[in-house]
Length: 327
Image (cartoon, rainbow, N blue to C red; front, side, top):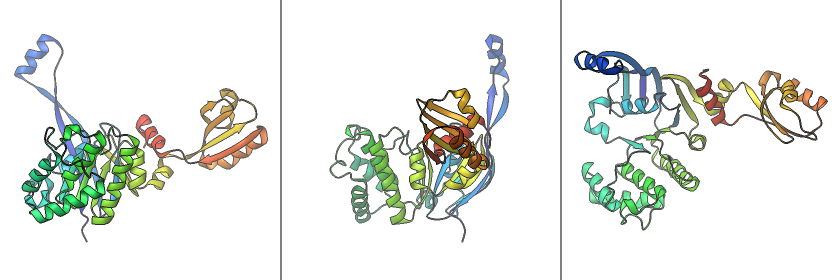
């Protein structure tokens, strides 16, 4: 069976005009422009099966949003092949648009001064949803999103969390098979983030919808996604599960020790890479292959009151990849 999303050697190159400084450069730029190519996405390949929830990770400018825009047909790829729901996205065929949705946390489709229901009715007309299906879907989504009593209010009077839920309702009214979600919890408080994550999990389970999710909140990824794609400087550098991500990009363990006596950073560095020192508490990063020897040395030479070994938080692992560029 063909994957619902199939990406093969996908690339996007933007020509950027180069202008020399000063008046001379401006005049020259007006009559004759020189360009350089900027590779936003380069040779990306992956496939996603129907019903999967996949996280799409990368630093700002890594190529996440550009990839999503190519998958939804908003922009043309420079090279490579894309198939979504067995359609070529940039052709923007009607039956393709009926099967997908794109939600961007920093963009809104609801009309600011109108009640939510008015925007929903417009969406229903655009997608040709009959009155019976419209009422049924609004009822189901209202219950799932806990928006009872909110749909008759003007969008501008809703809280940020309620507005994001209403945006999701508008985007899902036509029951798409594939959800492209770009930072859907951006700017929301902890409770609102939890509520949106809970809804997305329930929606995926109820309708078997496929979800490709980008987020800077790692709680979104760890709560919803068993599989992640990691893009760095336009190239896909990892495709697998979260545990495998730690194994590949975090070849160390985090060792937290509570000591009877404080330890200086110079003395502590003899036992591993010192991540932090707070009073008598020291946190080390120790290579996995050196863990047993390192812990034994700490216990033998230091007066240890407590010792804990854990994997580093996944957001720290990914942050380190972005900062160092080591993939």
